[in-house]
Length: 128
Image 1 (cartoon, helix red, strand yellow):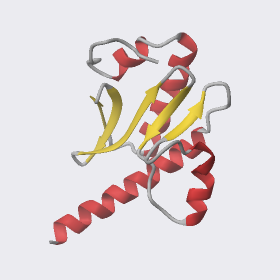
Image 2: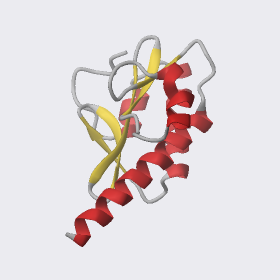
Image 3: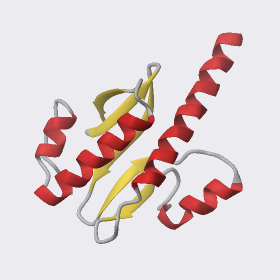
């Protein structure tokens, strides 16, 4: 689902360009991400809503004709990968069909997992 041909200025503008039912889903995904990573900052990157944490991207999310997506898929243990496997669509992408309930709790887990990954990456940089 394309919002517009131009890059939106912010997440509000991106979401405003979507159909009403998808706007509601995207607002709830946005709120879920904010709650899971309250220190993350909103921006637009690659014409998609993005949350950055400590100067690095944490998660992208976008709406399409038949699904919404979250990028990237965190690395992790086997149990976590089994939980997200039903939604994986290619390397680094989770797709949630619009004709099915959106798993907001799973999105929250993904964001928290990504925040831990970024925290570990940042702590590793500071030590070197």
